[in-house]
Image (cartoon, rainbow, N blue to C red; front, side, top):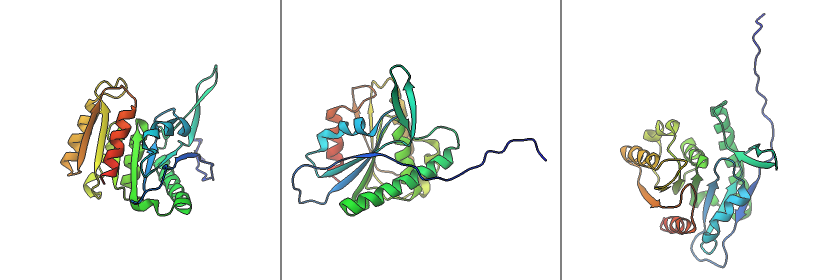
Length: 223
């Protein structure tokens, strides 16, 4: 008998949280749905407030919350959420794709066929999850907005076999957390694999200023 300890797996149900921003007013054009994935340590309620500039457009904004909670500081207590770490990363990604599938099913029960006109947005850590959701084949996004982050290597490897969709690379030139060079690297990779893309450059650090959100709204409405 081996003395080595074995780590076993158990799949369980968990409670997940999300925020929804519905459009104001009546609109004649088909509604578009934007799944917005927050960055490390953020919460869905605070993150969705960034998207107030889109409220007058016919865009349903849905901000799911990362499933993993932790204390960002103890005194006073401040809780943050994240999407994954390097621990059992592939399992976490599969769980995430399942989470998004359940979320979309729930949204379709309330708002109709959101998958037909679906856009993905990620900010910081959320960008890697947006790319991975697209790479999973579980959704067919009309477009993906990558804000202030890189293109993960595991997704880059899958690009040759993926259906092409437009990508908007939004990145501040003065981002102190993720250098703008990461957006330039993503641009080169997407170009190599014939993915249509645009760059949205701005000043504002590792944030999403109101003007950038308005530009993102224009980009979504054009598709």
